[in-house]
Image: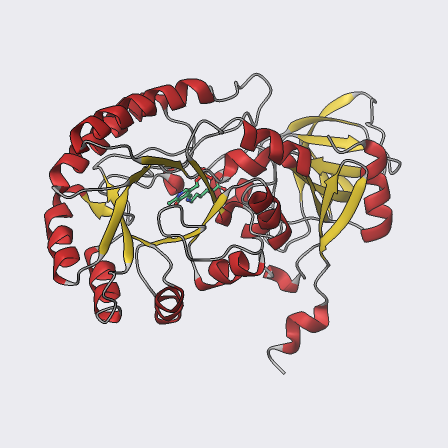
Length: 413
Ligand code: LLP
């Protein structure tokens, strides 16, 4: 793990707030999923090209959901080409015109989330005699999520092809001579042992219902990590075992081996990342003690967006953990908005974490923020994007510099 001395050194050099990732943690998480044929990183979790390069070095493929993410993957060195083990797959529920043009140009397999998306792709690739490679993302009729906002299955979700529309999609595939690679299911974020068996069964049923040969399935992502003390690690061997059983049933039905992909975002990067901020003010507000830091929800949106919990630790500027008496502390940021609180429940009720007595200038570290941290940041309140730093053993590398205010306003001049 990144040491206290490294954190202090990075802060001295690049100031706060900043993101720090530890490459060793990412490699360790990748190793835990090696039994799957293909590990495809859902880069929306953290799309810095240096992290994508690390993934590539480790043999991990990527999932892109926008033109920007496709371009990032290309810059990181992922070469579209091999269709069976495609380095890049584009997953979405619609194709905007810019993305459509690019995926067609590069022959990038498209994981379609709606019949119309499939149809538009068919129309745009009518001249391709090989048939553009496609996957079908199926909404099996139920979903799951750590928050309602991350549940991607069932009737309330906009994601995926409703399972009853599979035949309609098969007709579109035939009409446009599209090349169907496989079926995909991702029902939400947050590991879900309750539905695991049902998703496997839904996958088997859909493979049988589609009536075409397939060479792959993707079981989506969703694997969680322990954000709170006492929460367990996902049992990846068990996860694989359950899916492998389903895969074998599919293989027996099709009469040949297939490739099984897993598509995690959070699992690969969440624990590798921290957000380091500086304590700039402390105040008593009625019965609440507030610690105000220089990072806001424009940097780390998860607590404000989902009421997500991130463990916070306080450190002296030299990086040493503070060990003074603990008190319940509301940790908040600098934004002009009451929701800019890092300790809150879904719905906005303010909570606390027990933190030691601190001095202005101390460092507040938000843990497990490597997934959906930097990638969900915004420029709200005209705050520039903050730097990202990658630690690999003794090696410290700035992988994104701080945006300047001039860059931020340049588009409007
Ligand atoms: N595959 C697809 C098609 C997805 O939509 C997602 C996430 C993943 C894979 C990766 O899911 P993961 O393994 O990271 O759970 N911003 C939220 C998470 C939104 C996830 C959206 N889709 C958060 O901060 O928790």
